[in-house]
Amino acid sequence: MPSSSSFFVYILTNHFNRVLYTGITNNLERRLYEHRSGSVPGFTSQYRCHKLVYFEETPSVRSAIEREKQIKSWRRAKKVALIESQNPAWKELLEL
Image (cartoon, rainbow, N blue to C red; front, top):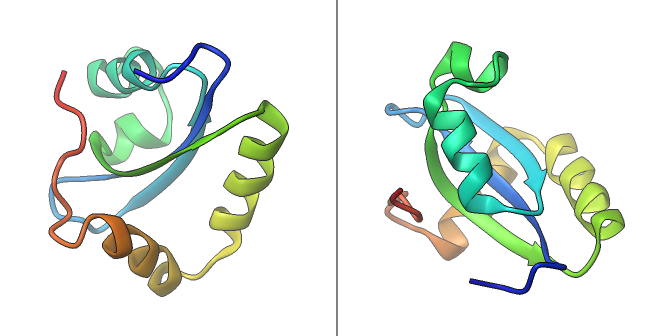
């Protein structure tokens, strides 16, 4: 696993790949557990976005926030292209 000073920008989807959620964290495994367990109410629990289909590591929280904002501003087609550039089959990238 990457160093503790790393931050991650990630994209989750639901079972049908209909909804995309973009977020940031400094601990990808912990954050995925939180999403999947429903311990944090909100968008991902409402739409059951539990499948990690994309992530990238950044060196600072500032760069992670900037990248998250950039990705969130994109249209769906551009987000799909980003996902498919690294994960063309939309496979789950981290099993817990």
